[in-house]
Length: 267
Image (cartoon, rainbow, N blue to C red; front, side, top):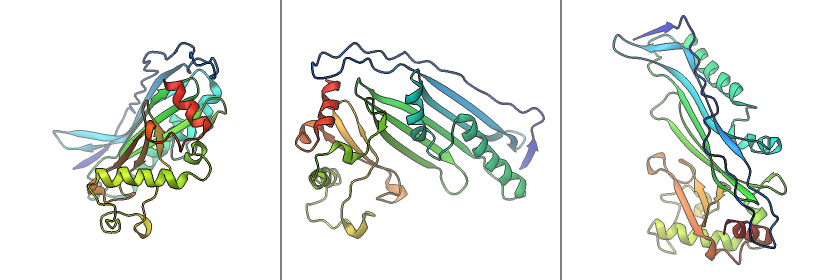
């Protein structure tokens, strides 16, 4: 096993992988504003470390890769930034530099005896739904920085396009109805886990005091409200993620007027 310093630093930047622009005709609902959906392109950036690991048959190195949408609307880019760069970097260049600098420092501080695997981080933010009133993003992160296995994280985010604001779950619920949504989500959870109404949740899950709780990681899709739990949040890593999907028909009495307008803008 050996670590060599790359003589010529190779930096690969894939610029603006442009999927088709999204531009939806005006909505037919008279109570909705006549707005087009936001135009955007996808941009991909990849950078690699100058430290290589390998032997006579194989060589590898750490890398950082990110794909995310860039909107024509500058304000939109500002408000979604924290949902793309979840570790609070300001942009792709800063995120890549931070990740690769950490790997390079790790290599420099450890002998070749302890460095036996390269790191990687692959982040992808995709638009789930782009309507005249709101936007749903999904950011998926796959990374490895040592240890027995990598980490896989997914974050949803919903943005109001009138307010230019990231919405919390409570922003979409009728005041006093959060408990009703919690009960409904628990009903779906128990059903998909094949649990009875009285089964104790302390045994196999990490809910505090064994009491089911909503997660603030949620998304609005074309026909469902999604509540998403990443690995380790409510169950062991080996058991994977948990996704609760609730059809909009079941939450009509729980959603407030703004959320109902969101749903109308889809249909």
